[in-house]
Amino acid sequence: MKKLSVLLVAAAVAISASAGVNFKSTHALKSNKITKEMVKTNVKDLKAGKASFRVITEQPEGELKSYNRAGQCVVYNSGSGLVAKQQDGNRMDIVYGENGKVYLKNIICGIANNFGDSWVEGQISEDGTTITVPMGQSIYYSDYYGADVVLAYGQSTIDEDGYFGIDIDDRVEEAIYTIDGNVITLEGTDGPTEIDPYEDASYLAYGLTAYWTDNDSWSGFIEWNTVLTEREPVVAPTVITEQPEGELVTYYRAGDCIYNSIFGLGLTEVDGKFNVVYTEDGKAYIQNPLWWFDSYGTWVEGTYDAETGIITVPAGQFLTWSDEYEYGIQLMWGSTYVYSDVDPESGEEGYYLGTELDERTTEILFQVDGDNLILLGSEGDATLEFPENYNATGLYAMYSDDQTWAGDLEFNMTGNHVVATPAVPEDPTMVSWYDEGDETGWNTLDFTLPTTDVDGNMLDPDYLSYSVYLDNGNGPEIFTFTPEEYTYDNLAEPMTEIPASIFNSGVEFHKSYIYFYHTFTGMTQGYEPFFTHNIGIRVFYTVDGVKNANAGGIIWAFDPNTSVDEVNASKTVASVRYFNVAGQEMAQPQGMTIKVTTYTDGTTSAAKVVK
Image (cartoon, rainbow, N blue to C red):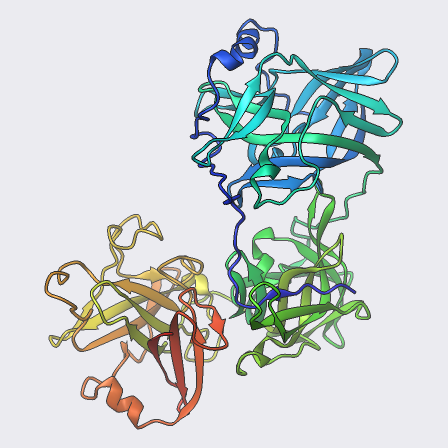
């Protein structure tokens, strides 16, 4: 078994080749080294029709062989920037057609992720020892720019200001690959064989590259020392993406999830709807069994025993699959746990998350209990203090190639049957109001929206909405969110009623809190509080044109006659937790930290701590 250990609550850092290497964008940067004279031969040949502007996106006819590629490259990715790396996990396909024609797919390492999949045409020699690929072929065309990305050879450079560029070598008219059995080698390149992405020397090489034809700027890719080794193709597993036939039942998910994203590790409550299809022959299909992979919309197959109410789902079923990389994400059973260790770079002790796949569990069990669907056998308590709250066992996402954690473990999952009918929602809960306390700050309103109506039936969150009210001493006034002030979530028009299901992953609007910002009206006179007396929330449930508000009216943050400090002073503290500004929990305050105090009566308060 293989464990993945990552620094807990550490935000993911994208490599941008920052050691003196600068790159601003794939297309906008015009290299300081490239001139039209340097590429005039290739451009002239293109315009003369000697190389085709046609981008080949459909697989040509012929015998398809797949190759693992090795060597070195510099690639640009919008998520990680410019980076020098070894060529691994990025295969190349070659089609051998009639009359010695060959076609190479994604001829440059990593380019498929940015320009899509395309093929270039070449010719194999009569003795079968070489493949030649003419330069100047188009591998991508942009309607927006009206320009092609075309093949070339070039020398990468770094100038005195640290900017990365490419000198196009217009003397090279074709790339030559030599064939030795099942190994194919790109000739005529030169560059380092050992790569350190933080060292300038790793970015300097002569190799196969590409450039934009409209302004002769570099495309963001170069590769060298390329060796292709023929491989046996992997048969893709079945991923169920279409809804099976049968009785469809919709559930609303509750429970907890430990996840890993580009923002780092987190622990959160799960939510949202998922479906189960029950068939006449005793099968059951569950859609999105893992909350974090909701966007994939895949189904897993199981059997349903009507007498016991047990759904049995075999572990190992695929939720995703990549034909390009030939691995996917499988539904398994596993555990997470927190341990302390010393950071080898800083020498400081920190908390780490460990994960462990349970290979003994081959079946995952769900219990149908009336209107509920319950995951059996999971363990964990998200209400415990850090780090115990990160120790859990449950549904586990695993990469199929190396059996490492794919960044999701769900536990305490319960699905509640949802039917959308007009209903009166339960009252929301006001959790806390946090005021930064100066004119440049922000404010956070934390709340809990109801999940059931006044009769205890589950609500469908797609029909739930809420409004915020302020009381500055003259009675309640509804608050208007404007596109000018709330720009990150792209409001199309002013809104006084917020759909609960729209902004769950937004910047300003979240599932259980909203960011408010101070206006600039009081900047010159110093801090002015966002409101004078009170702030509150009310929820609405609208189905088939029938709109019902919660019976308790506006739920206010504070008693209007008592200050929040006076209220909290009379309470008993149950626990204290710390969070960074991204909402991730921390073991202790560090930098600007939000201290959240929970009292024995269930209420909380928040304050800024700078340490």
